[in-house]
Image (cartoon, rainbow, N blue to C red; front, side, top):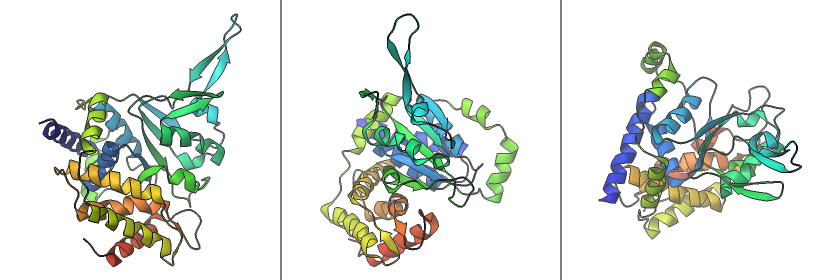
Length: 312
């Protein structure tokens, strides 16, 4: 009964997201699956296609505390994590938390800031905590990061290092809407008003409960081997100079369980893996003759690798 209720609740969440982000049901499904699996999301897109709207709507629907961090070229790690300040007259230091201390973080234009500041997110994303002045401080639970980056050819961007890219569960792209959906967006106009009108569908505690239910989804041993063979294929492909590591396999395993759960099953099927593999793997690959990752080219490579791996 608890599992069926959780599935119904997550489907309601997905349906509500699709009323805000029009014409992108496949992307919203992968985003929701990542949320259920406890993984962070990287959105790469040109400005103005709805990346900020996604984050705000998700925070509203789940009642999550929300902070948007606009990354710039002069931002310091302390601007994100916080800083200890001297209290007047007391002679003691008091920690002033930075914007990272929220349940949903929109790390906007992450590749606009230098690597030193980018790395300030690493511990937070991988361990749910930050260390400031040699003291470790836990972040609120649940903790979920949606980071956006502009395509690397745009002016003033810094490629994210491999260690940072590997912390992202999936990479997604919204793309431009269809003519019909863009017309609807233009007419509806006021995004903030539409988001404020959304009725919350769940609570942060519900999200944590859903994640527990997702962990009960079964994955056959043959499907684990299938995932492993796809990942191994990225390490031997001639067009790839750096393939996916073990963390990619862990992400694909967790994501496939979340997608199966979202689709109403308590077991994973090969189609779950095939749908997820491009989003899980493409940003982790480094292609020969390129700086950073071309997501479109990497996606095509992942698809060709999957075609060469027998489906169990």
